[in-house]
Length: 171
Image (cartoon, rainbow, N blue to C red; front, side, top):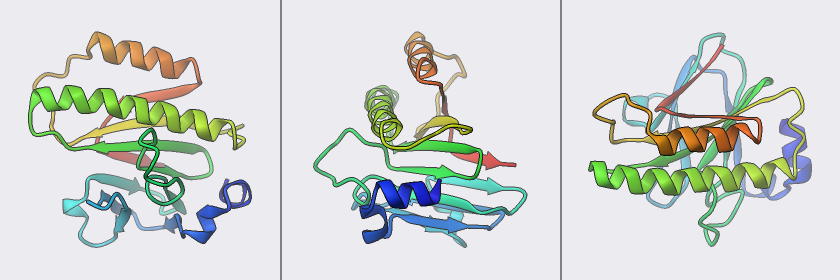
């Protein structure tokens, strides 16, 4: 997948949007400038955590403000992948329940648009595609809303598993 991305999306190489790690755990942060950074040692304050139990090569593709410019608001922050799973992630911070709902709607739209963009450019055969909404404000109850159930069905129609969370584990 790395070579395919570099070949079909050349500004990935130009802008140095693709990074990798074999660490057992590392964090990813979305900076105020919209740039994704990998936190290799101080991951406790990271927005999203990657657990790499087998210490295999995990790639991180910065999408927002790197691969795609910031003039198009309909894109997610980054993707993380190995040789079997390709996972799109959108990080949103909301300090209230109302803010969470609003950010969730926008995040779903950004993930959906990003996946549609990549599906038309890359071959995902033999890859499980996932999308994760990373919301800093935790829900008060673990009930899945009707809206989230509808969104999961929409993504499932594209062959994508949609979930919420603050981490991704690669086995």
